[in-house]
Length: 199
Image (cartoon, rainbow, N blue to C red; front, side, top):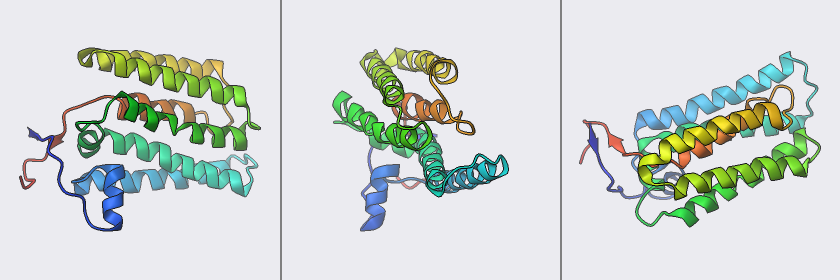
């Protein structure tokens, strides 16, 4: 197993755009994990909501499926070595990471709108913690970032389960949301590469 921070070239056309989301040079195994598991989870959440008779509208079904795919896909994608190499490349610093984090206010707002009657206080509390926790991790010395991130993630579980409201059937959303950002994305890790990969 070797570590390689050198970025390969982007593929042409649409696939090159995809590389900017998953990291150029993603292996087949990484791509399979990112593709199949989130879509299976999206189908399962729809099946569960129907079985549990949650009385969701079609819009809520669509949003739940898309958010499931986005959240679980984000957890997996951001944790891959190819994504670590891309998102933590030279030139990607505090401002770039916090911009990426801030974009996730969109998911929080959509979730609140469709499942919590647009509870703006919920968006402010959950999003505010998201920004504060990620900023604290990024400002922490590299060798301490992992334990600090895990401490803040543990606190996010308490907030998610005992402080803020969670719609029935979607209690998992905030814990997975914070897992995606605080653990999978923010933490810088060495990009290990398979031995059989061409150098």
